[in-house]
Length: 215
Ligand SMILES: [Zn+2]
Image 1 (cartoon, helix red, strand yellow):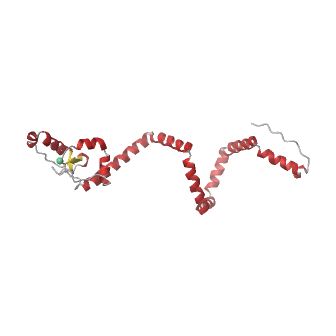
Image 2 (cartoon, rainbow, N blue to C red; image 1 turned 60 degrees about the horizontal axis):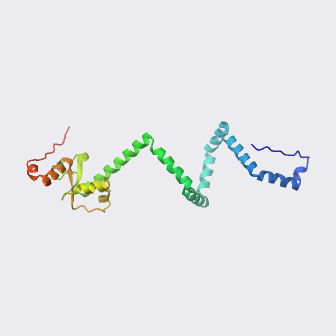
Image 3 (spheres, rainbow, N blue to C red; image 1 turned 90 degrees about the vertical axis):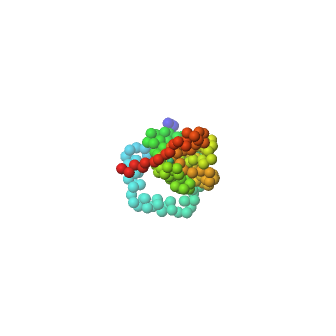
């Protein structure tokens, strides 16, 4: 706190120019300004003042006025520019990054992100299967979506799958990867396809039949 000493004034002194200047200079002092700021902050944080403020802001006429103010082109422009420069500030960017990191660590958020990612991948997979002729194994007719996968007709797909992982689906969907050497097989038929290339004699003795559950 700053010790403040105001000399006592006689009547009429307040109109004197030098007193006016003195008072002005006093309020311009940095420490006084800071002190005022602090006091204002403490005051505005008082529960009853906070409540009053919230009640005032809830009034329909206040809301309408605010809405009208925010709709003004010059205010909109100013807001946009201010927002841009604000979010470009390194400390703000760092702060947001940190907050996002913390937010994404919350168990419910983590679960939500995982669920969304799975949903996205599932939709992508379905689109890609449609591009390849449908979500159905071309060998046995299996339609069990969860065990269907992309097969490289000429083999050697492992390398690409290892390199791209799930983004192989994205590459196909976005047209960045050709599709004429791919088809859809179920995991079991894909294994047989592999065996056919490695040990054709053994593979020829096997036949895969899919029994869809009807109940
Ligand atoms: Zn199959």
